[in-house]
Image (tube, rainbow, N blue to C red; front, side, top):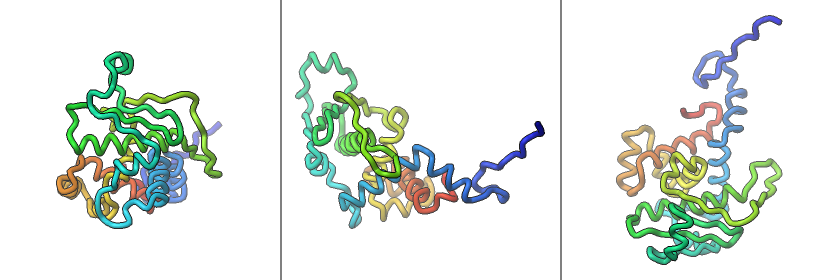
Length: 206
């Protein structure tokens, strides 16, 4: 057997076939999670105008209950150390707030809880069938950027208004937009890059 010809995988390589890159991007979990987020935003009429998503109302409309700090029994706090939310199934979500969280973090936790629910109960099949897990799902979302990457991607698109995210052409711009929105600059940058991947899959961002 002879040596196989090397195929360039860098999307900016002059010899690469854009169709190959587009196919690889579409198969990535990052891209798929972003597509689910985009469809969810469109279906719920979020971002129809610039401004923050009404996350508390949205969570409640999806059957979500918000437990205020101190509302979790001491026994449960010990049993489920670090738990942020419990997802029982469609229309039954519980978010547990802690006393040390600021308003910005609480907004992010609400968005992440919605994201986990949507991603866990959604399959990425072309026929858009839904798959269900058995039993309640306990999640800890304190470090979602590293521990729940897909949920972070989904939540980034919900937290950042499209019009503002589109203006974050680089990290410096993301920092400015992030400061104005009171959102993590990295979240703004993620939302912008994901939006670009959806509209231009042949030129994915790193």
